[in-house]
Length: 183
Image (cartoon, rainbow, N blue to C red):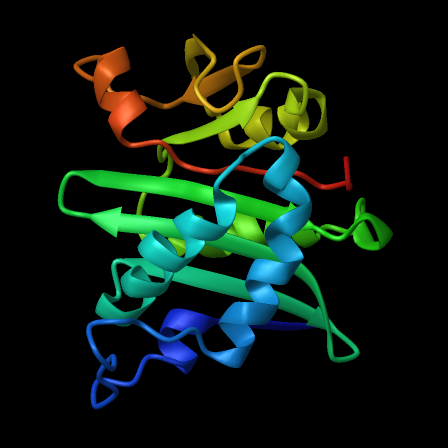
């Protein structure tokens, strides 16, 4: 299994965006395609990826961890590290590779990159059963329930939020999170 971090592998300090536009690199475009099945739960994921993730990869405030098997992308993790926030934004494992420990490897690598044992993360309440074991393993604490954060009828569960964070701060800092099966 090949695990790589795109922020280290593909960050080029000499590369400048043309006309104030950041061009997506081929492996970033592949990563976005891998995430698109999440778009039913997280509308706007394409815009988020191109306006937040790609620039964050360039300035090293984000990392994109790829897991490949036999040259095929089978797992992906994205995390954000800023002065006031450590967040696991997205974890996805291909349905054909669920249950093989890839998710745990992604979480381990992202936690190490973040240098944080309990980063902020959110998950749709319908997806929580897929993650309960891993969240329990890491000791993540459920700290909020926010109805309508991404979809009017859904509830997003927040984990490891600082007690000083309020709902309005969370709404301003929406992050996309996890799915291990196409839904």
